[in-house]
Amino acid sequence: MQEFQLLHNVFLVVTEGDLYFVNINPGVYNIKRKVVRMKTSDLVRELCKKQHISLAELSRRIGQSPQNLNKKLKKDTLSVEELNQIAEATGTGFDLGFVFPDGVKISNETGQEE
View 1: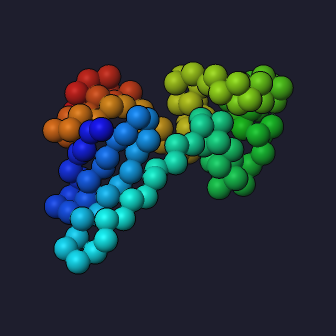
View 2: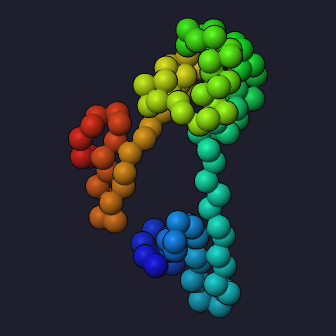
């Protein structure tokens, strides 16, 4: 188990692949809330829903056939380059990176530490 302090009284706890936010305010019970990880395909579908576009329209915008995009979504095999294309095609941003406990971040945006 690893713990990372996010705020004065809120910790992120990592246990065997699960993430929990734990609130340790005085007088408040320890409240654990499991963080649910979405698959990439779920994120893309949610993006389309919020943008009010179909997957077929998204596939057209990124230059793929609907069948090819659906296959990649089903297998969850979209590349980082394709995710960046999806972000550009929908006018959104895409950020992928690692954040160390000291706050240093390695991001796909720069490929370097921030």
